[in-house]
Length: 234
Image (cartoon, rainbow, N blue to C red):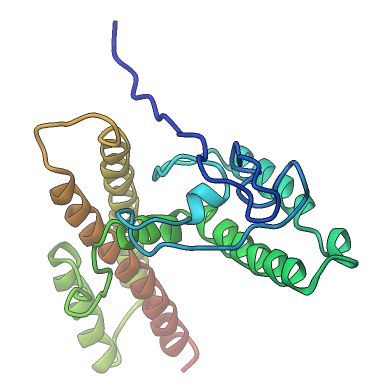
């Protein structure tokens, strides 16, 4: 029987800062279920640090591939707990902490529901620098065709079929790039609880490179659109 990776989420072991009751579950880390006090937000920048991150805030496992329905369900569950109307008569400290948590929650939801933003967040959380400096160069498979288009445009003899052909090649390359990213992410999710022959750090670096390539391809698509507008509006 094929083994299936299992993500174990440990229950919170700390207590409410107001009433001292144990905080059990991801909802309680936001608002104590016993006394209704919003807990102080302590975030972390790396997985090796104590504190909360976007995944723990939304009660989902730290994975590249996420269930959007679960993200949405958990987001609205916490949003109801932190709604400002619940704290209009509460002490200023409680009001401030609820607003801080709500702001953090909104940021977490915006990030985790976007595949690229979620990927970059995990990379940073695991200590991988996501600085694209030095990585923004056209893939070799597209370079010759792209430079030829620019040369033809400079000579003012660029034709629409040439651009259309390049766009088809670019679209195909982007699809392959997206498939490569999905494959690496799936492999990394499988490494959360299981050791494999390929080191996790190696896969993370491969993923970062693939993300930079995909980002550049998106910018190249915009360059092609500008080229089309320039050529066909003469």
